[in-house]
Length: 124
Image (cartoon, rainbow, N blue to C red; front, top):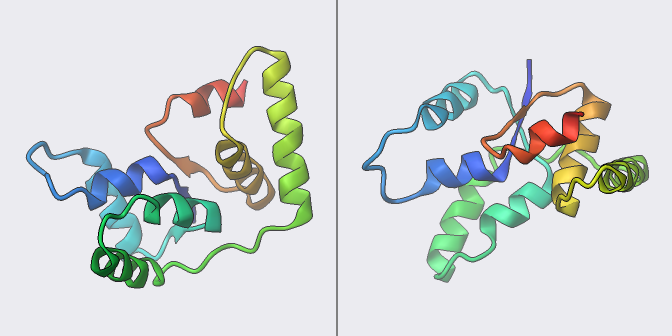
């Protein structure tokens, strides 16, 4: 089964400082090796945002190009807005990107690989 990998998992894996091993990084490596990773443009943008040097940016951009983006539709954005509104009425806050991830996951029947506990709130 394919899995939509959230930005926080990519960030763990891409950090230079790996003094504390994290099982999530090992799991991401396994998913990559099994060709199970799914990507969307907003996650790609978050990963690439804040890179300090052009050389690092280009290197990471090339690495991430191994993971083509799932095509996003107007329905995805509309579903994300609906999820945002539903959660907001319940007092649950989240980012537009988080709700877009949820919408894409629902449409494609994908689990989301994340360490962000907010996603547990979005399920309710």
